[in-house]
Every structure is written in structure tokens, then in C-alpha cells.
Image 1 (cartoon, one colour):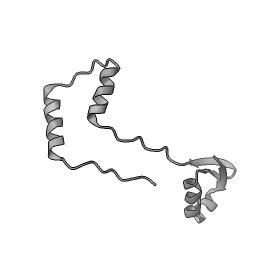
Image 2 (spheres, rainbow, N blue to C red):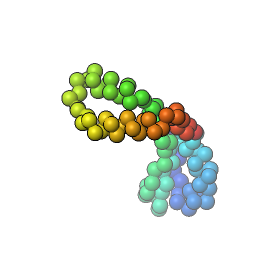
Image 3 (cartoon, rainbow, N blue to C red):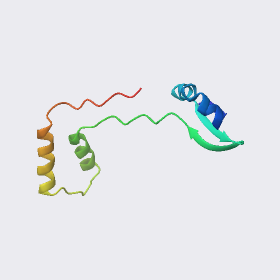
Length: 93
């Protein structure tokens, strides 16, 4: 990953250009009088969504001793039943 050092004034003057470099994978160090005050880098990719059944299965396979009380299970079932539409999270750029 390339590292770009830039003054606060230059960063403010061309923030769109700075962000274009970040989207391409560059790390940008914003400086004030040769002292780093901020670092802008690409965000870590989001983790893929998992089904609740996959999470429970993973917990069980690891020997988790977590217990859900009956009220929680009822609340969760009610929430799932109230929203039967498929989850369609926004895609990230």
C-alpha cells in the first residue's frame, strides 16, 4: 500500500482527490508543520452476513455454555416472524 504525506491545507484543498487515492488503496498521512495529525486508509472489508442458525451451530461446535432464556427466544422468534422479507444489505464500494 502506498503512503502519501500531505499538509492539512492541501488535504482540504483537494479532499475529493485525496479520497480517490484512498479508494485506490493508498494510506494518506495528513500533517501540520511536518507532524502527523491524521491517517486516512481504506476501511477493512465488512464481514459477510451469517444466518442465526450458522452462529448457533458455530457456538455449539466450540462447546459454548451460553444459554438463552425462554423470553429471549420468544422475542427473537417474534422479530424474525415480523420481518419475513430477505435481508438485502447495501453493497459497499
